[in-house]
Length: 104
Image (tube, rainbow, N blue to C red):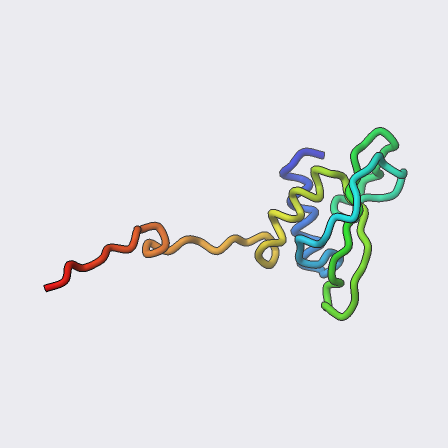
């Protein structure tokens, strides 16, 4: 899967609440354990890098453990900053430096 397909799958899982909003806490990064990635749904191979993460469940009532490819974890963290991967657009005021008025 390429990044665009993984992002689409993560967005689908965020929208359906299969994945919670991130970023979660990385417990450890290690070699794959042949589990299924909770972000993309693909098998994590023994030679793949894997992140084991603890985060809140989608209903925010309990914590859950997740296993993800290292790249999937990075994308999940980016996409789950805002609901369904939609980033807040910067307003014109956000992009302009504050200008102080001179005292009379």
